[in-house]
Amino acid sequence: MGEISLKLNGKLETRDVADNTLLVDFIREHVGLTGTHVGCDTSQCGACVIHLDGVSVKACTILAKQAEGADITTIEGLADGDELHPMQEAFHENHGLQCGFCTPGMVMSAVEMVTKNKDISEDEIREGLEGNICRCTGYHNIVQSVKAGAAKMGGKN
Amino acid sequence: MYSTKYVKPNSTTEALEAIKSLGEGKFLAGGMTLIPTLKQRLASPDGLVDISGCKLDSIADEGETLKIGAMARHVSVAESAVVKKAIPALAKLADGIGDRQVRNRGTIGGSVANNDPSACYPSAVLALKATIHTNIRSIAADDFFTGMFETALEDDEIIEFISFSKPTKANYVKFPNPASRYAMVGVFVAQFGDEVRVAVTGAGEGGVFRHQEMESVLSSNFSADSLSSVKIDSDGLISDLHASAEYRANLIKEMTKRAVV
Image (cartoon, rainbow over all chains, first blue to last red; front, top):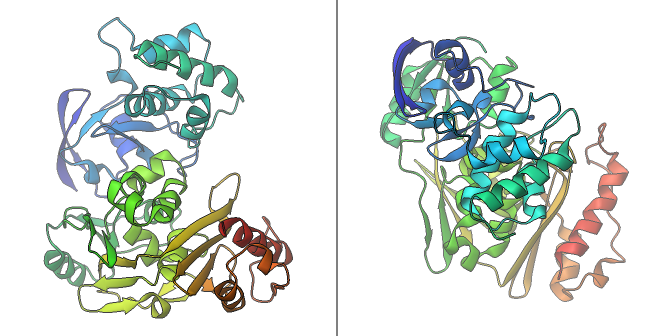
């Protein structure tokens, strides 16, 4: 056991955790933010994708202790009050989901790839979503959503 | 995951002290293989020594060689202007590992130390005549990989950086497993003047290996056509649910042809 502190969606969170606590369990169980999902728990599906110091990572494959002092953003941290993030809006408008279970991870991956490459092409979007699996096979609308989200975020494609 | 201890030292000296004090400890780099292994309870180390604070992530062009720190993440190698200029094939290889989130965390040192038979990096290390520099010695790539998941590393030895020889020309082509993106077969071809080295990953029961016959054919005639007469023996190749040994033998030749451009 030991204490860790990190910034979660702009707020400092300090908890006592066991050394083998996964970051996703820290977020969901210790802090109570359940927007980050656990799908496969084997690093395949990407439902648990969050941003750790600005880069997308699978929170089921990182120990909470490895994130000591980090700046973390989860799906709950994207919107500005009641105003959705442009990528969330794009998923809403393009119906980029069916059951919605994979959606938080899809949105977090999408935001990072577009932030790094705002004029992203469709091929790059598909390659960028390699680590996110949708069991409803809704990729068509997800890709359309990311394209629309990229345009809202200032992209030219 | 079994209960374990976690420590994060600030230098390799401290990391070595920590691993000695932990009983059966394991170094933790990016954790993209180790953490899933722990979650499946395939390993139960007494403790984990996170080396991400040990300042081992530099990338530098040193003239004859390209030096990459053990903690350099795949995304850093893939996007590094220094790597792209010195050995573009290495940046391309890094850009094709796993998925985006794995590349954001996984490291070159972790991949090389683990020596997964389907990992991409070991083929580059072997083909590019790399030297693995640890806290106590320098090991030539030809002496480093000793079998599937086996290397010459001792328990309390830590990779600090890897130096790659700069080739005249190099390329890496893999046939990725469609689900995992691991190489069913990956071939790294590197040309150093008259010398050609061909390293194959994903296929050998003993892990990564060099293919001497293709090396000698390509050394005298560096063209895909010259490989037509080469017969790849399927003995000693992996046969599993993804591909038979014979299929992998065929892929070795095909991937090598595609790599020779």
